[in-house]
Length: 221
Image 1: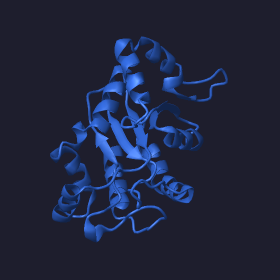
Image 2: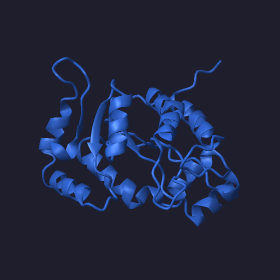
Image 3: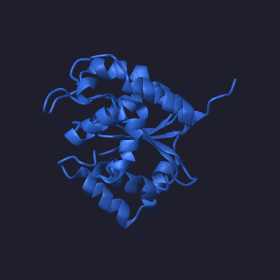
């Protein structure tokens, strides 16, 4: 029997995510229309410090993305291929976060993911707590186990709070959402670009005096 490595295990889990049959409250999951659970992306980079980036949930799936999945198949490979074929990896959400974490010397592999894998059902809907509980326990906990890294960057207050409480054996760093309207991410980015050294020094100390992993918001240091 051939033992699977982390990449194989993530692919297997990705397949389970994409084909999840649940219809939780507050979300859309309709494979016949090309609306599917998505967001788990493994980005291979040069050798360096690896990290996870956890958001809340995917945004609304646009028509070209729906058509891509319907044309190429409802499978995990379609999610991964669309990330590169459509230049989704260069859009503001990914580009801005990638820049920040690289400046903070996390220049290795990135596992992009979310608390919940499905888009909101409403125009500007929220994700019910029960839906987050189910999805975190069903998928995110496995992702954290498979992808070996100590640091999780959590985007926005909801993602930060859930990650901080769910994963006490990981270093949780909160970052404002990169496409938020309050300017908090832009202000933090300007400070890090101007001089990343105070931030690098702060996050180099991942544990408290009792040896427990810390959780704090980067914009509040």
